[in-house]
Image 1: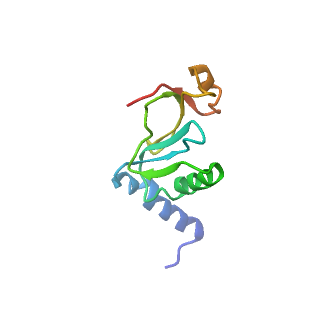
Image 2: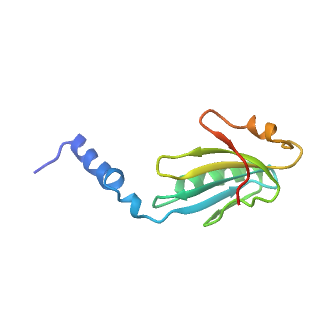
Image 3: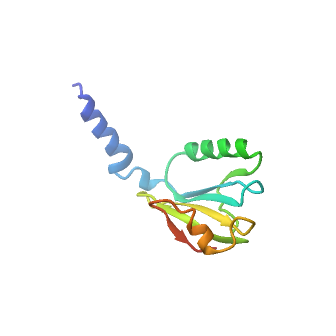
Length: 127
């Protein structure tokens, strides 16, 4: 019995998304710290998925263009000196936050709020 392409896609979607397979994966954290070149660190919290491949790739590209920074799994951004962040919540329950640190560019909450794009909400520093 051969399945049509739409049926195959539906079955694969059920396996990886709709049937709860990803729900069984443990949630994990990762961070991309662009300091000292930029007063910013982005973390991905409570991610459920097999890999941070995309997040790590974007971080490596940013690191190369800023000549600094670091990527680390099972870590969150250091909250020391954070003025605030711009947060996006994803459907899997994970949250991605761009944290901004006190420095020449970010002195107040208002400075950070200007960085928040559509779909992002300002958030105060959290432990």
